[in-house]
Length: 342
Figure 1 (spheres, rainbow, N blue to C red):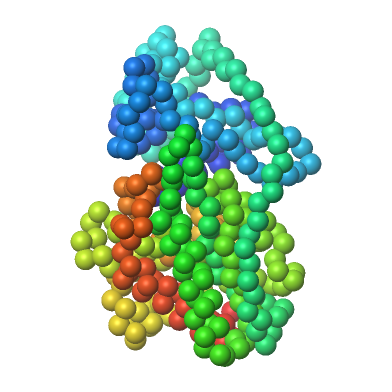
Figure 2: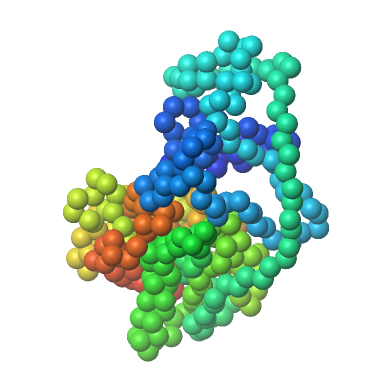
């Protein structure tokens, strides 16, 4: 996950400099290198082998309709063969270059004179309609809302292969619906209004949650967001199946205090890694809320090897951990919806 976040941060920084394009290369055995591997005879992965590349979900991109046609910075990932051709007259060794920068933490930018790369592409644009699924539990105060959400989209179906997405993110939507069911079953009306949302288009750029953050229900003030994304699996080093992480807005220490209290009080037995951040970022649906300075807390159970693969199946789910994370989210949110903590 940290590598994904690093790639995202680099790209955002480069886009902010006014660059018109970026050429990415991942030296060595980095995961991104497989995206541009030069494999002339066969294509092979853990769950596929064939003589042509399998269709990719990432061959298309989406964004909200805007006033211009800009697609942002053009970005391509190239193979080692292309990099060697670009650098052949520079005496630059990419792996040695990367090692020096990594160890010195100082930039060593260089100009590649007379280096040219020609890219030919086409654009086929169309407007499609997508929907968030939203339910509302009105509180005694409807001017302020707590938003509980998780995205319901995943990679989908391509070339006959199905990405079921049991962990990413059927688990999160189950969490949202389970908390909604539990709150209705309590028979109690919370002080604050609670909105339950299954977001669309997370995998295409947080489209659903970003739209809601810009157009909240009833134009109400958003005072908190709970995000569930991938809450049902274990990391490779989690042999007991009890580890998870909670990222939250560090200004609001009560979010961690309540999680610690409820984890102990209800004997949930979760081993939680707390990640306080000034304004939590990343590729999940808490980010659009944090960008608007809405306090957030975000649970994730683990980062399994089946991430974004066709092997993310329901039989791999750690049901016990998933239920405990849902309980913790319910307990924290219910207490925060009935107290003045802001």
